[in-house]
Image (cartoon, rainbow, N blue to C red; front, top):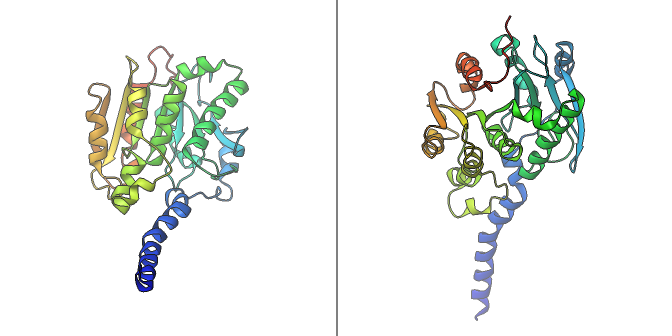
Length: 286
């Protein structure tokens, strides 16, 4: 081969492989946006009867956040396991914990690297953290884990919807609320980067698979809220997820975009969380 063609071929290969190498090396920073808790946030939570849960996973020491119900016995109250979006924190759910007059207990889980947690987030690391957090809570409450799971439901926004569905699959939870979920992270990469770069995704969040697994339970009930003006995760992804499980997954198109939809549906969340609460649990009344 003529030397000039060798040089041109080498330049072409470099031009092709450079974006591939960049995507492989920095995709974590494109997906996750970890940050510590703002000053005073944890202290405020603890002043309002919140509790730290400290446990260890392969990523190091993790901290989740538990709030018991305002009234009634915490060993009987429905327990909502909450997950935030990729730029949010577990304690961002704090202002939602008085929904339904304090009827519910809340377990709010940060991803590795977020809040007070060590390590780096990956799908597997998030799965480990969710399992370990519930185990730690069961030990703290002195309740068998299977009893605790029987009164659990999950709630999550955006990436948190994927984390919630993974927890539901791993723990055998069959009720929950998903806000602005995507179908899969690879599909999201296709939206942003196009094909074939989407095939380089290493973080395999697949809500089709996890929702299908959780929906196999005969009493499965999941509700999806999705902003009709969402420019980040198109609502057609939620339409696809709900359409695949008629009667078990209900979609509510909602006002707002990707981030403000959570605030816009607060009133609906209260009634929906009551509806999805396991029916064999006693209701706490004010």
